[in-house]
Structure formats: C-alpha cells, structure tokens
Length: 322
Image 1: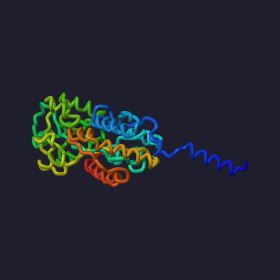
Image 2: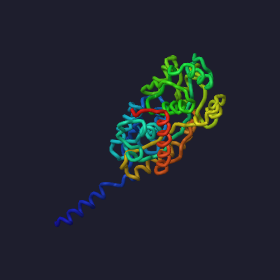
Image 3: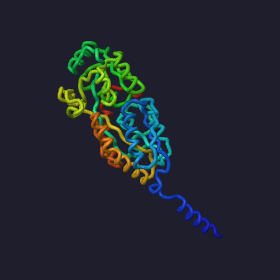
C-alpha cells in the first residue's frame, strides 16, 4: 500500500474514533477551582450552582477550594490546566479585574489566558462593625476615624478581594484613613471582627447575615443601588450622600484559553440553566444577589470596563503592587 493510502486510512480511522467534543462532553466529573478558602460567598455560591449544573451536564461538578494570595494561586493553577473543559474557574472582580493593577508578577492575563463561559452574580456589600463599636452609623464612624487617624482598622478576605476593593473605594471617597488587615478568607476575618480585634469590614450578607441576626455584628449601610429587600431598614451609601460608593461585587465562570468552542457552549448552557433555576434564584434573592445573564463573548466588554474601573480605584488609593 502506498504511503498516501496509509495516511488516508489513518485520517479516516481517527475521524471515527475521535467524536466531536460537543457530542460526548462531559464523560467524567468536572473540577471547579474556587480560588478561596471554604466558608465565604465564593464557596456557598459555587456549591449551589455546581449542583444545578451537574443535573444539566449529567456529570458531577466537583468544588476544589485552592485559596491563597487573594485568589491568585488557584487562578494561576486554572490558567495552566488542560483546556478540555474538565477544569473550570470561579472568577471574581479581584482575580479577573483588580489583579491586573494590584499584582506584580501575575502569570495570567484575565483577557487572554481564559475564555469566559458565563457571568454569575452581582452582590452588594454590607458595611459592618462589631457590636460594641462606639459608632452606629456611617457618619459616626467617619467622625470616629478622623478623630483617631491611622488607628482604625478594617479586615478583608485578602488583598485584591471584593471585600478589600470596596474598602479602598470607601477610603478614597470619604477621605478616611484606615489600616488594612488582610486574612486568608472571609471566615477568619469575621471572627476577629466579631471579637473586636478589628473595627469594621465590608462583606456579603450570606457571610455576615447570621452574625447580624445573632447580635454579634451591626450593619451601618449597604453598597447596593437601592435598599435591599432583605434589609429594608438599612440605608444605602448613596442615600447617605456617598453615591460613588454604589458598587456590587461580581463573579464569573471561566475556562483556560484554547478550550474548544462546542465545550464552552455546553458549559454556558448548563450555567445559564443553573442560574435561572428556581433554587438558585431563591437563594440569590435571600441575600440580595442578582443573577447575571452575559455569557461567552458578551463577558469581554464587561471585563474590560471592570479592569479599568478598579485600576483607577487602586491608583487613587496609592496601593503598591504586591
């Protein structure tokens, strides 16, 4: 048999034994890297959405918490993963936007190292203080902080996280001087806040709500565009005169660059079904969270705007690259 016929035979054989990814995907469990420790909003949201996605995909979506460096460690690992759809990433405004301006040796580019699957949710922050704090409103806190320059502290889930970025925004908008105390995740940051070891924190209702209900924390305001249905008596920063403090943290599902388009389509469809399910919608409403509809190519312009926005905040705050 001539060499040409041998090559033709090999090509035809490979065509039959290598079906299109869209027809077979997925044939085994999918790993969802969540680049933060368990216990915070990224953990609770990912587990809920993963469970719903598993139903659509016919395979289990397994959560893999890989915390460290404000989400950078897990995100870098996801960027290096095989682009076959079996590793997906939980993206945040920190890892997918702020890190561009905040991290010195970032080994990934949010716009080129990943392909967007679907935006997930937008969530306002609650501005909370420990129960025994000598202030009960934003105005009282600002006055207190200005009377004690350089001594007031705020805790966060880590450098570059949403809890950190909104606090830096608060500093630039109000002119208040606060010291940053970063933790490896929301849970330890909240523990020290409850104990009064730090003064204030911005975090999400899903994380701080139980502590507010238990009387361990008090909420001074929200960063939502309007009063939250779940906390109708809590004022927004905007109505208190700080319109530039209207902001919501966001999240996304990403895959490594090079992932086949049919696989991205399959994941996007499963994500959309999950995010519009009654179970996820009810959970989101309970915590003032809104599902986001943008998917695939629609996500890129949003990401570009967010990279610029938080880059400007970081520059105004005078933060040095870590």
